[in-house]
Image (cartoon, rainbow, N blue to C red; front, side, top):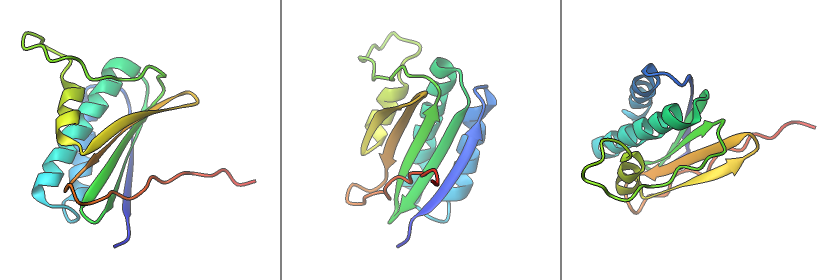
Length: 139
């Protein structure tokens, strides 16, 4: 099966999480099962929320789907890497990457010039998401 891609630019404001979740759901509905759809929407929500809270920069959000698996990426303008916080049942915040870590098959952060990309693979354990697209500047 060929990979299908989706891209969205979001600003670092309160409406970004909802807008990204809504648009991702529209894209994924015909492509993945309900469980993968729900997990992907929640993971994307948490990644965008982290970008809003910590990067304070516009974000480029992408998804690639192949064989029922989804690779989500959120690119922002901060070089500060997110990291999963230790579990604290009294904390009122700081569980976003814990949620990502529980729902994603794997996730990580890639630094790049001018920021970073946080990515997560969501879907069935035996599926492999499509590899990332790399934009190459023409010579």
